[in-house]
Length: 616
Image (cartoon, rainbow, N blue to C red):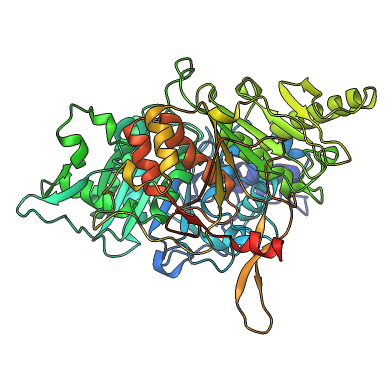
């Protein structure tokens, strides 16, 4: 209850000959005290206290059963005004780079209709806002997998709009607000981590490119025995800055809070160069779904305590390989990445090019949003762009839009920016095509993009690659978790574990110059009403499922990617990008862990469910 001072209370009393107190003076005094007291109330951010927020144990909340939890340190405040209120407002709410937060949440929590019923390990997200100059934040947002359940895969605006609902205090399924009674980051971190219960087997991982790398091969063994170390890790909380790196002072505060709560702390990096937050989260989540993250972190924690030691693979023990040969592969920095294999991603888009629009409320906005995210995954990096990566968007109308690394220079990774540039390129290409004779070899280079067209009779455009120097890597979705490739530690093996010997020869000998990574059309799980069996069903995309060009590569390899949900092309691009662009021993080791045979028996190819349905 707000009470005015005694001097101001005297002004409120009616004077002699006055029947009521001065309304203007009373309003000013009460307003001044209300604003002052509102700033002193902790965890309210100048708004009313959320009725749906409680201070119970975290075990009673959403998203606490996940083994992997991502904590995003978000720049800015969580006030309702920090989030877009309409689709037009989403175009102007990028001062705090909330597009990076939306992409990260879609990577960690996003589940499309084609991913329902799949027994993959899930993850949760925690948002901790740094706060502005006037509204510091002291509470944590806990988001579970149900937070982004939409009939179709969401776009950035839908994610930010739902976050605004949470900021306004509306009850949202899958969201919980963890109020904190402390004020310092060390105290709030300790209070939040203690609310999980028993700290045994819990780790806090601070991620930054300046820390030690994450091993992708080798083995952890106990010091007192030769057997591999089987270390139990039940829960991991990975801290990432969004969109900027976590400052050293905040890392120290989080470390101190974890120490008070009894949690272990590790400092790791996925490569020596900076990377987008959403791409780091996608790689870590895929590595966890492969069954490799928790054993590796348990071994690193035991090594830090002096209980275990790491041993490199046998093929590296007798060689003079550097330490980077067994750590997470990282492409060369921008400006030094001109030499090596060219990786060309081919992504089908379930919409015509003429309908390309940045409007998030369009009926086909989900298809264009996924295309924009694939472009970001293939071309963008924290500093510069990937020069040895290209991405081609194959639209339903027969048009193929190829984007190069220059497309990403000077362009924000926001969905609206990417789709606006694509829309401008499409309009210019359509105008040029209307005044020229149709030809499959004719292309339009507009807006740093290459636009090609197929003729009405089915004639496809050409691709300027030599078949002998090109390998087509056909990715096929796995509708069930694939078994981990390694042993007890999960990190055994190297290039010999790659399921396709042709790809191993390409990476080891350099016989080819281009790798075409071809993703299949969008598929879903269709349930038989009689038997209840679930099979793959074709929903959209090219009828033959082949390349959109009149081109056939010299080598064709079919493979599945471990740890990637069906239809999640963003995560697949991020994971394959690390292994293919590195091209060294650690790159081959990573591919050996994540690539799996695609419905094969020995060396004989077997039709996938989608191909079988198509032939039938």
